[in-house]
Image (cartoon, rainbow, N blue to C red; front, side, top):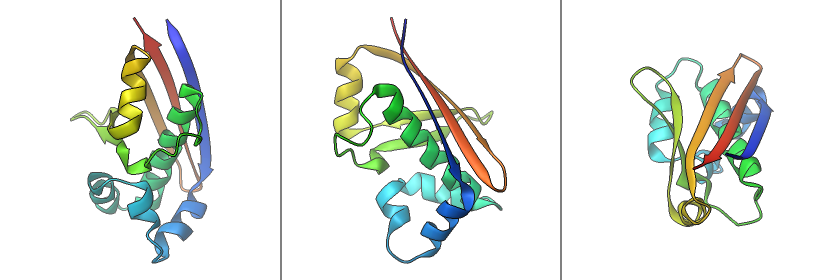
Length: 125
């Protein structure tokens, strides 16, 4: 049964401006492995933007938005050997996911030079 669907779209340039500043945006939003992954890519701002959109789409699909004061690095976007994205979820949000009997979280990412988007579908048994 589908429990939630979330989508988010963001301008890549907006994220590029934030990661270019020394204010700690990267560390506040992304895990160490996400930073390593994005920095290894030629168009790293597009990859950061897609991952930021994924985190927002997940919170929308859960129906919580940012109301729970979740630490965004605890929502980690990873890719398998074929490039398929998924989430590793830790901390407070991990407890919420378990308490809702969520069996699968589907994630799709897309990005261009100017925009990035993510779609999340949450399913239970």
